[in-house]
Amino acid sequence: MAEANYDLGKPFSVQFVWRIPNRDFLRALFVAEVIHQDLVSEKYVVRLNEFLAGRQEDNEGNMRSAEELARDYWYLVDKLTGRKISLAFEVDDGRPLWLRLETLTGEHNFFTRLNELPSALSDWNLDDQNEEE
Image 1 (cartoon, rainbow, N blue to C red):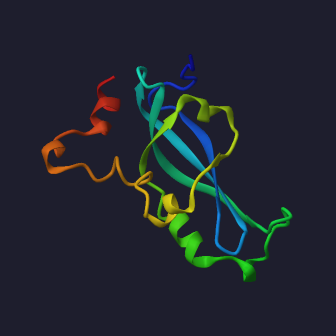
Image 2: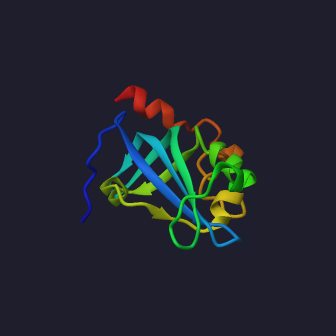
């Protein structure tokens, strides 16, 4: 059974990795703030408060120069700031999360599902829980 190592309102770093079509890797480091703990499913709900750093590597792990960056993908990475997402408690171990590219391009709703609630749940607000506790 996994345990939450961070309490509500506490920040920690989370790193995401994607492989883009040219076979390069994008690594992005964010500050995530815990806004909810789901003890039943052993997950945090976090807000990605700040994009701290990123790098693009070729297949061999060599860092790409600024001129070689896939700017369209980095634009999408930057837009993740402020998003609310659900992450397993194990994410706080510092290891990178390898994600499908579709999560970055929006074809998969990993970064959007908690930000676009159905109208029936429009009064549900995770931010309120953090303020109450």
